[in-house]
Length: 285
Image 1 (tube, rainbow, N blue to C red):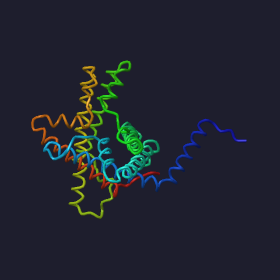
Image 2 (cartoon, rainbow, N blue to C red; image 1 turned 90 degrees about the vertical axis):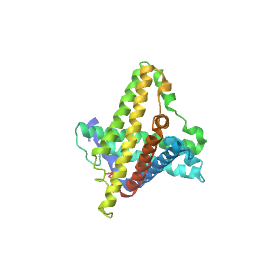
Image 3 (cartoon, rainbow, N blue to C red; image 1 turned 135 degrees about the horizontal axis):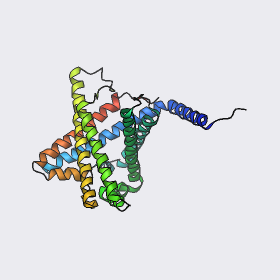
Image 4 (cartoon, rainbow, N blue to C red; image 1 turned 180 degrees about the vertical axis):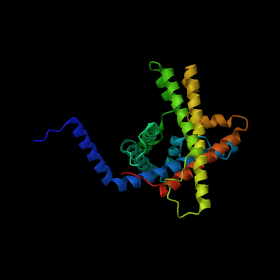
């Protein structure tokens, strides 16, 4: 009779899960690609609406949830949201696989741990966005609630609330700084299979990616900064999400042009996501 130790049971369970993931690899890859498409469409909508705002062309500043609401109002909007929700959920699953099973074999050091942690956070973020899409499918617009000021107020009501909000602000600024760092230094083409394209087109694709990451980095840094202000003043109304941050930019000197630059960057990021949907090398097992 073989007695299974706790360590052996854990290893056996891990092997079983890895086998399940390996068998489901084709489906996970397909859903991840659909998730890239959903991300791309969302960011193109956010950028396009923001691009029209400063020049009075029917635009408005919004965020990912606002983009989902825009999709909801289109013909066959609920059907498109179902597809987007499935894709975003698939993207979430792929990110979790990256975080926990490390199919890309990142280095086992602080940098590697940071990359896996970032993928976990990305999975949680887009899982929440997928949940929002499904809420809107079944409950309409009211399913997309969750303003930045609301959760900031909830956090501030807890013991040491302002400190928690301040920590959240620092983390978000860190995320923004990482996006800016990636825009400047990362080899964005390493995981893209672009051999069929000429060198000039590949350069354009990578440039679009860099501009997109830079625009996201600026927005994240602004959101984190506003959270620090909210924490310092103990006032949740000072907190701003992506839409409010872009609206703040619009009110600055030369704000219309600054907002247009950020909006164009978000559109570039969305287009880059569509390229990734088609040409990204997706490792699952």
